[in-house]
Length: 600
Image (tube, rainbow, N blue to C red; front, side, top):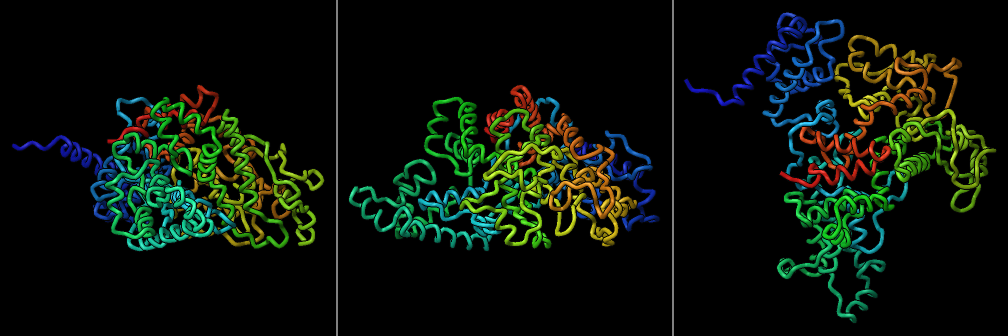
């Protein structure tokens, strides 16, 4: 008798167990005879969409529903392994996709194992914002920059393609296809035109000077700017058939310009990857020298303390807390309000930056500090903002969103201790980010907490579910939420609603309130009596700190964590707490780990 390979035999055994799982816990409601919710799980493996649904429902313990016989944790895990293998055989790996990192078992990530940390060899496209900075460096002055709301420095050729509520720069997502390649060629030509413009590095005036000095070498100069090393004779020869400007365009279009190679992680690859991990400006020539002569941990620590290093961590905060979404939230009632979301985002940036600088008890401070930096009453042109606001007939001044009285507002940016607030989750920028034109989005606020702090996952609402709350203007939001207690809704909403209810203390402009529709506003939840006590409760949770570090890992690594990274995460956690809640120490631990420096 021919024996089956061990892995095949193992999968057959797991498969038998999976069908036993379906028989014991699912078939009473979802077989050929009874198809509750129009779901039939007989031979469900043949339907990819059904496999995805079953996976989500099982891993989130939504099914079997409350009140029904429940499988043991071991039974559930074996069934999930079976579903994982089905999806992988069909070319899908749920746990590596952006936004699905929480599918990885949390307990296993903070339990020591014998697995060696490493990252698969990869070619990772440059971050669009970082590429814009590289373009500015090539040109010699900042052409591509954030100018105003809705106008960013990123080019359409470098779109972010990750889903909402995830980190933008994920290594496995961004590739070029025909349309974006054509846009990229136009982008490269535009960079080159600016390079030779009146303000560019090779303006006619500069060219004349460089030629007098016998140092006019556009190709070599741009190559040095991009790669921090001189161009070789062989490389120069490969461009020899092109004219001068076409050489620059071709150089910008090279794969090594557009992507970070992480194959061998030799000195050049390490410097390039580390440079972009620590700054949007990427590596400089000095970084290569430092890595050759100083310990890696010292180099990283010193660069994290630079303004560009701290700015990189602020970007992590923006993408993690998502408070920059405030710029995209339309408010119809702005005629009565001095609504300035970009200023609020800047206030939030400074709130985070100050905590990053101190680097002590970072997450606790982010969640509980009531010291807020707020723009002053004069703008950069020394014009009193309040006077302009009254001229525009604004009823609510900018500082009113913080509930700061006009007589307490200083001329210039000032720190305020606000007793009714605690941390970034009660900052107007964050609150507005999870609101809409006229209402709070208590469900979205709760979803953020569930996924970003508690390590859970909430699937998108099924197409057949009516996800609309009652439009009755006489009902408070809490009263409207009674609809989500229906059986077809509550399986998912139990992971969101209660988590967000405490923040009803603030309206959809982020203002503290005690009344809603003439009634005392209800701010309690099953977790806490009000938003301040909830913020402090979250800040005291060990798991919340661990989930926060998991997101730090994803941002700097450009991928989700796996069980192979467990020892890296454990060391990150130890470094964080050993150094008094130091986020920078956790980042140093990560960027010196084998997860970052080793490829397989």
